Image 1 (cartoon, rainbow, N blue to C red):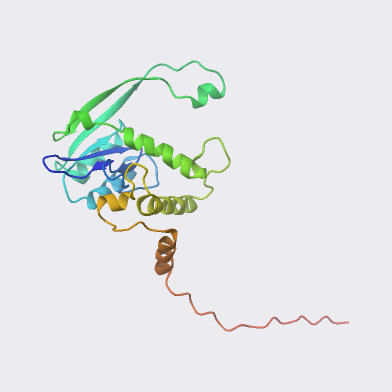
Image 2: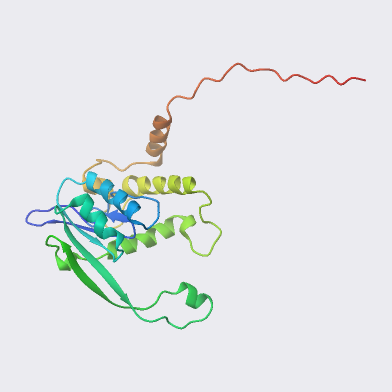
Length: 222
């Protein structure tokens, strides 16, 4: 989650659950499908770094893989804070209640990792809220159903379509424009026809079919 720079104010950013998200324009800057190890964290941070032109404030949750990934990708050119949530003991429920209900969050600790992050903006709330938007927008993210992605390639394709739709086609209720328009990278609201045109352009012209060979009828001997 990132905030665009404004006069006399630093750019602000938050990162939570693998989704860099701009808090001012609501623009999703980068995404990745993978594990929660250091390799995937670094790949996502490298991609995020390549898309930024200004110094930002970045917030992650307490996942330790982000520590080395942010340092290697940004070095000292970032104001980086970490929000570590503190959870209490298990609720003691039985069956599904115990398995799928998270422990009670009893507090959060803000840590300065690099630079001079503003403690008021060390938060992952925007990104956590967008996680709900994703689950409500894509059936494959609904828990406890058989609608989950069966192939990782199909999962990536669905996410790619969703993020393009969210950034360029969907009119944000608060902004009244798309995130791309608010960020200044598009001057109009896209339509689904625009996305289809991009897909067609990426695939190129269809290949010419080869010579048709008529089917040979097998001769049955008497």
